[in-house]
Length: 490
Image 1: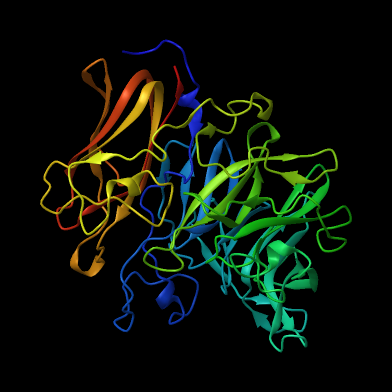
Image 2: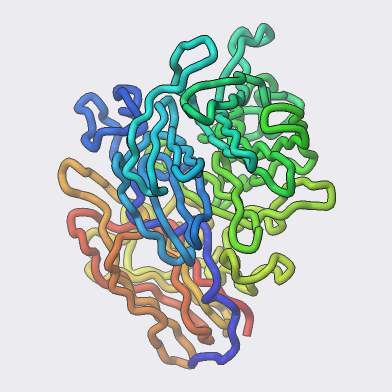
């Protein structure tokens, strides 16, 4: 049944990233907490249904490994983008937007409205240094911070800020920058200096799905990248709850604090519809062989408006020195960092199940089988609670070479207090050809993955079927947001 030809699937990743142990969403109780690190227990006054979320990533490549620091928890480490290891740092949950930078022989860490911490390793433990201190001697905690250490050893801080807007009677969002004292990195020696202000002429900065607010948008989530001597300020707009959420770029050839101009190729990451929606607040960082990669926030607001996941894509520099994503924001397999140069293009793999109307063993409460193949992250197939052996099957309408599968599970009726928590899902993926069913994958999961991406040897199939063999946590029902089998025409 197997084909000797290779599609390169073994060297691919797929969005959203298959990050294990996605944290519990805590948005509705952050406002009740002081300090940087969040409590684990939900306050009694918070009645929002439980959900999970991961967003706003700061990422860096260090000693052959990728380190990912998102909102709600940290950190995750990977060498191959197939396997991410969750390392619970001490302290653990930084609320929103952690920012980490390698500085001298240390690692500095801060986050949303938080003080500064330091550690000897990128995974901590982190020791409190204290609040930042302005030139006027007044202490402060930055909102949506980013930190940058230049080649000359000088250290910088960037943050979200506002200023009054006489036209609207509200405020204008902006990004400000500071230079910090290299002897005491809490202390500001220059700034704040305005880096970016919300500009209504930049349509992508206008709030609303259709950018209909001509006067306001959230300009936030700064991240400073230096590449080939140019400083790139990557930022997010216009609102994390909108499908219009994106990242865009200003750049400067002068310094990390001045001379920034808006690049013409904006926005950098933008994807309004389908499974990958949003592509906002994140970063752009160097990977192997000087390559550049964007990491961004994907909006998946089913249970809560701030429910989110994370994606990534390749970044290139054009002849004018502007950043762009050569393949855009992707929802199908891409080559992992370090495997091939961008000139090799994309793997010859597309979703063969997208738009197919599947058959299924059952469905519950109008969560039809088609919702697993409709390319939406807001709908899902859910088998009946009494279905002991649920399955979903797609007819490919011809013979195709299949190589990989993405499963995006839906957390149904989570309740941490009652012990209804996420758990691994065992499954059997089968292929069909010439009247015979055969095994593609037989997975007994040792760790829980909300998003699961698997590759396997090329096989010719006419149909594919997913069998949910065992729900390891019988207190919750299982849902499937996406069932994508990737391949190519025979």
